[in-house]
Image 1 (cartoon, rainbow, N blue to C red):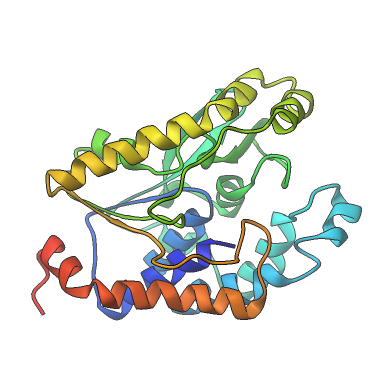
Image 2 (image 1 turned 45 degrees about the vertical axis):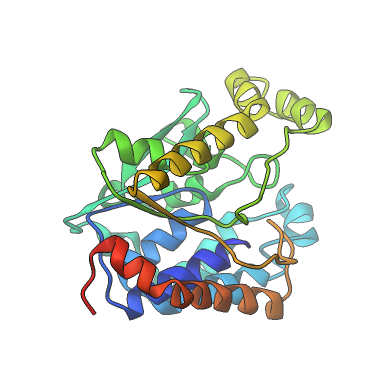
Length: 271
């Protein structure tokens, strides 16, 4: 649900007609990225202020029906797809746009071009362990790429990107804590056939710290601009009212507008 902030930021970029040479999406940011590339402000707004609140998609109902707290099948098929969200619209995209997906058999996050992805792969990119279920593609299971790559800066650097605009959903002073013993135990039990997942989740906070440190070093060199919520929010990963989500979406637009001159200068945009 915190992706409502990113959706607001990307809506502002669409309004400003700002384009990039390369794009990287992780977790719910994968949905945001695809909607941005489609130029769809409707998808950006509606997914996080309407669709995601459907009790058939998140909460007790999917838990009783499917055994998971979040039904990505329902959210995508009953809302996104039925409202015109089609991955096929990106198959001819000419730029560099990648999404991270964690492969349970591979035990790592790999990045895939949006031009090669279908809706099932996008579901996999967003499917949180424990809260959602793995997506099976060609007999292999996949989950949210944020298990190891919460910020995709390393992939961008690997591709030779030399200036990065990063949009994060956590405040600037956020400190990710280690997973507690219960979550780590649950990971080992539920994913006993994929032991690397439990190991990766146990060091997730360290990977996040590493990725933030890389971005901060790039900022000092003038090679990165790190954008994150300027205010604290009551919205969590799976909790938020419609009013709170709309407010968070608007905060994304507001923060971008407040930093407009800084963004223009960094990107070399003439206005």
